[in-house]
Image (cartoon, rainbow, N blue to C red; front, side, top):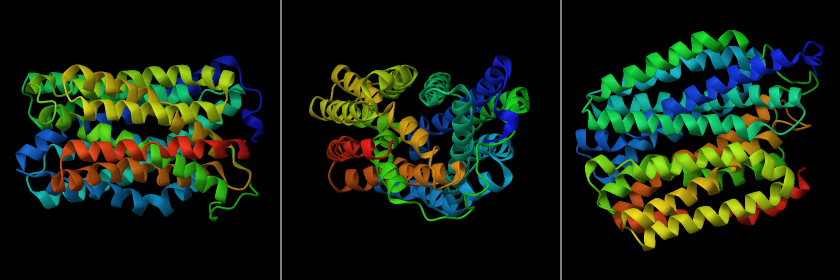
Length: 386
């Protein structure tokens, strides 16, 4: 524990928390802006479901490449520096997506997008763990609530862009400029140093408990990734809504995910981590199955609302536990859990494409629903980690 951070004033703690919240918002806004226009890129390049799935695989490949790098970068250079760099570069790559004209360009840019997404996630969660330590109580879910609120905002802006027929590059440049303004306003108030022990190694093999946390995150994030990347396509092709309503499912999902994260800290205090995670897996699976069995706009929207509730608290809870690891530095532990988890987030969408091409989009969503139960099955192991 760093002595300079041991007794901060209330104002200093609040300024650190607000600055980190802004970076969570930047990350969520950037990512959701990409996902809500995927069906436009699919149409622009005339891709079928399998071809789109193949292109989307560039994202998890970029994430895998960042696995041995992101935690090391955050631990060596501190999360503050890495987070500022990611806050600038991540929206820049989004702008590049709006300018590409060839498939090979899209693959390269999506690789970079996946790489930077993981670096951003590790750096901002390391900041959040340090700030949670200053407060001495659970506040991690509220940070992720800002990420979800940003996702909701990104989908809302994307809906406006679609209705106003903005070209993709204009939409993404506007988002990029908004993000860079937020970086300029907030970067000075980020936590200057991380909660790290000098005795903890810069490189270390994740222990069994860290891997279990990663698998719990994976089971939840495979559902979340599916919702982000395929909800618009599902409403367009299966629910068969008009073009102006293709984002209804995304908005429903993001709204309840944000609300769930803002209330999760209090619920965890009252009921415990294990029970909340078990409930999360059941409710997300039930919501997806409802949308699959009854694919009309009303039941599908209700189902997507349930999925948002189900996935809302899983990632914040497991990352908070990982950041308190006694065997690894916070950046390394968070990188391990985040990378395993976000493999599900990024592998899910391409998997949906392949299954949908071989069978149907409804069957692929049904499979993801069953995989989401993994969160509930593994939640009982949480008691042995905390």
